Length: 500
Image: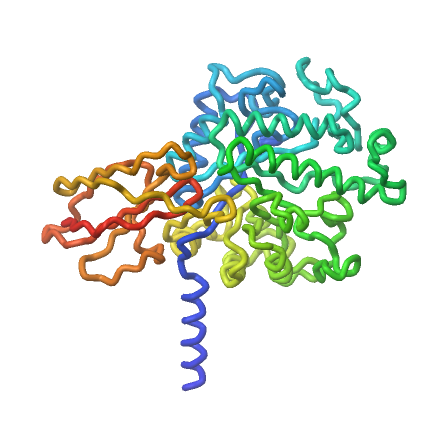
């Protein structure tokens, strides 16, 4: 009996630790637009219908505790925003090159609605894909007609040739344009660099002949990897030169290399890998500081015989190199009807979150993709709302970009249950007040700034009015701090007495 009680107590303590509410945790969801996976639900919806779907999506994920949206804004050399470089996406209006009517800018609307809810907007682009099918009609203004020599057909799709400096420069111009004109929080690429291999050879012999940079035919794989390296380095330098606070993140396929091919690789048996098949040397970019976060897609269950989720999470933790490391999870696989028994288990994703929270080097996750949260995920939504994401969390700061805390509030005015406050004035965008944390505790309670359970609200507003909730006017203490746009936190205000 004593042994049972001891084990029960240990399990209970462990459960509390693993389900503890972290103050800082990346909680994101991908919103895919290619072939209308998540949004808009179909091409050609009215502007009002598109906006309504956006707010419905954001309200759902806000209720689940998410703090970031990864929105696909350039699925195939097209745009979900106004661009002079590329045409409007066919997935938006049904016809490539046709703007929404009545006109609005979807990316601007997404950014505004995310920031209103205290959520980050990570702009997700595909660097090289030009068309999902080579038979898809392209707008007459498409860059493919001006520079057909930049375009390669591989299988059923069209791609920019990554071996051409001109193509890499164009992709960089597209990203620069977005960063200059839109208040995005990050630029995000997924796993599609060189395409996943087909039986046929990728047709880049011409660009290799013209721009091989001294690589031999036997070193063509290294040349391809260097082409992608050049793109990533150019992009990071360009982003930071325009807006230093804009993050740059990559979400690679979940296996860098198998250990059978490289002793540094993971003990897995993946059929494809980033390094060998997509020519993406992702850990080099993280190590060199060319990216701010890596978000590997670990879309496998715990205990998978070839690609075990837990094994891979622990492999990736060793390759953070002082930068952010998040993990991609797969709610799209959860189903009572799945042929894989592990995905029929309601606790598969919760157990994955527990594994990730037990690894200090991993600071959160993202879920693929948005639409699955509208369906039956075996009560995973309730697990988030009532347990794992019960308290609010901040996207973790990135001290290599900026570690300076903003100035504290300079003025707080109280009138009954209403408060107004003012931040310090500054011209430096990195130091400006972006949001405010309101901590609320009962008077006399010990206060812990690091406990997310003490966070009453994270808001962009500069005032609040508390409702009366108790006839006896229970006493509380309110403390307010300032966050900059990288979530560096100021010193707290002195506690303010509140009766409610």
